Image (cartoon, rainbow, N blue to C red):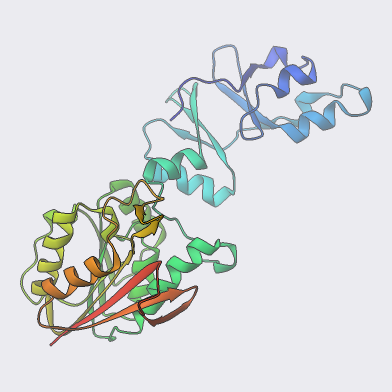
Length: 317
């Protein structure tokens, strides 16, 4: 939450000059407050410009939207995200229990606080950008290896969009993520009768041997410390039933001028292709393993010349 409120003007100053008013706007919105700092309403920059059109000052007060969407400071970030998404707005007033304006929160601030890498993908695929489409394609690819009777674990499930997709091809899905806000969002937006969501660090997970028919870990392995990654693979080999399958993905470390470079600071465990392949093979010993390369929404057998994302499909013998 941003507590230093800059986009505020008192209602008695509403007829100030256009430039003075517009200078206070954030995300195209101005909060209007009363003398006691309680939230009176909001007005958009477009409304203000219309009021000052043709060198005339129309009644701005007529354009104020009263009782605007807002959220209590005691509510969670996922509650705020839900209000923003449902109402298709970019900024939300934050008030206390007395309706006094104490700050604001924007869609960008929320998503950045959850994680710059965590996606909140829409059910309407036509609205998703190319990066989101590639994420969805990886989960769709994973569904090809699931059986309808599968007990499936989705590790680092994020907002739950992938778990929901997996649930259509599984008997049950357990989605796990480190972020409590992401899990709350998943429960509110991607719930299904055969999905359970759980907040946990991957390194703290503890399941009995042969607990799952399938384990999916998309957009995970590059975000965890290397020793956690290796231990996670060892655990996977125990948690999966005989005949079960692991599907995981990771970007392959790239090189420029013979030097490795990582363009994303949140990728703390990007590995060269061969190192990643060797780690999978040495930790998933009793598995039949295949590696794939992603080309948009196509998945091809991994060849020597391929860089980018590597997808592993490993079935336990």
